[in-house]
Figure 1 (cartoon, rainbow, N blue to C red):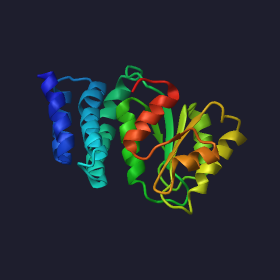
Figure 2: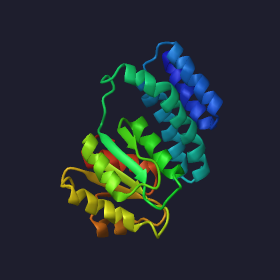
Figure 3: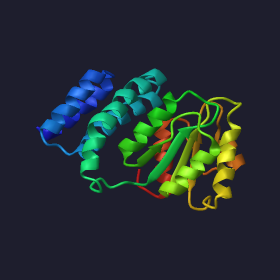
Figure 4: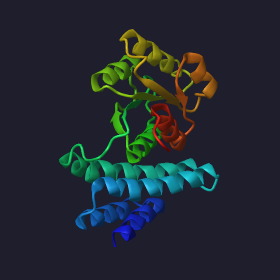
Length: 218
């Protein structure tokens, strides 16, 4: 019965229908299934299948968004409160401070990445969009983050990623915090040029890169 509910949640994610996702998650909770298991065995599984199909060219970006948005909403509204009730029971892989850089007001891609990282087991501190470099560094220091992730969607805002590196250096935590950068104009070469640690072309790669940077198994 329980294994069946995980499959039901996974299939609901793949249907891209918010109502189906919410109904399946509520059903699992009513059966007494642990919220972390719902995320790991249901939501994350569904998102991974959608992500794999995207990587194989079978689905498009719009499908990633359509799968990630209800997943993120269900996690935030239904599952995070349950997890917080049992604080400490969900083993976190690490803390990631994430946001879209100052000047960028588009955050769909960042939201997908945040949902995928959370589903993968990271504690995600989402600063939102249009975030100054100093805010990334300040929050990373405040929460003891392992990783800072920043998305830039415009060539004009790309330099802010470099400013984040400088901001981390300025407050003395660059050697303690890894960085992941992505976004339309961002490339692996750019990340190497500015002294970043990881480049992620999409949400799937972001999870893989984050795990690699902290030495976690994929």
